[in-house]
Image (cartoon, rainbow, N blue to C red; front, side, top):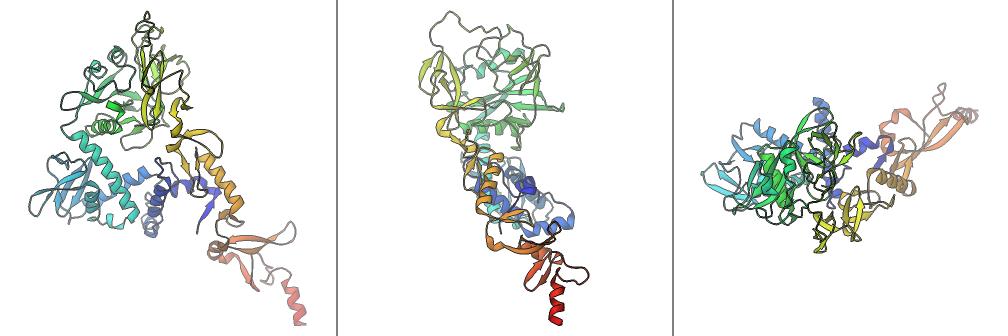
Length: 526
């Protein structure tokens, strides 16, 4: 039975999986979350123990994190599973498998498989990462209770995570975290210019002199940098908590896998507490995530920045609002922060690297041509540059330019939004730009097409789920017909009386019968 209660929309949204997901996976993922939350055993166990944490899971990332934590706990407490299996940052337990010093990474370069030892014969084998996780999960008592949809989802997610982990762990790419800023901004040491406007321009001195930062990068076997980012070592949130945050990542050919491998390596070696979102949307100054994938966009971050007007500046993606008096840069507009650091100028005076050169100095990677001035654009999730005079193929959304093929128009408000950030409605079957528009569209759709229950104050898709009762209304001193779900009528049967095939919610306390009925009875008796 499908129903929708507007009086508890927030609770419905959180507890029944109506959450944001990209890549066209919303409906499927909502169903996965629903499949888990709707298990009857969860409610019985929660009522017995008073622990409602599993019922209140509100997002796919929380589902993934919680499920894997419970699997690990279940295995740790099971004496029949004595062997440890170390994979990424997880510790699983098994009756017959374990990992060696390589922690599951195949030394033959196969990044899609996990290396393990069979404890019965001591030999090393490999198995597809998702399949191996399934085997480990199903050895635990908790894992055996998981619905199939949830198990498949965990397998898919782990396969992706382990591939990135293996890629960054193998000798092909080695992580460095140091103060070699000149190296990561030099095309001589890097595999290409990474689509960055700061390469070979000497602006890296900003990171050496103005802020507390580190250079983080991956080098391949030839010692060439293939991915890099800046790590801010001391960032404060609004509560004064200190974070180590990795800024936007750049890579050879804008390869998202290399960016992911760089972040995974930084997380694994405990260099960071959070990072800039990878891919589309990374240009948003607030788009940070913690190491578990939870959004930090609601936090306000700041860092110390000792920058004078004539000091060398490097273009800033996030901490671009600068208060020179306080020597603080913010990732959000703040009173007193009158200088903008998101500029390719040499310094805050507006000096250029070569004021006497009238030739085009920028490269438009989208059109593959030179330009006098370019801006960052996003094409199918990849960052590129485009001539500021030739932006016809792009749509401006929240401070960034996105290719028109990656943008949709909201059916409710008419505003443009990123297609992979849509809010899909299982009720209308359409996509919307935000929860507010989706809720408005769903409400209108249900008002027009569904059936309202007066008693439940909720809409029902199937009219057969509803019935009627007579409600005593003192304003008219008579009964008024109202609707109620059959489920609620069963649940609240003590509030109604059935007389001659009709339900009443109020009766004459003197006779126990509906009002006026006793008069008819007296006439018949006479």
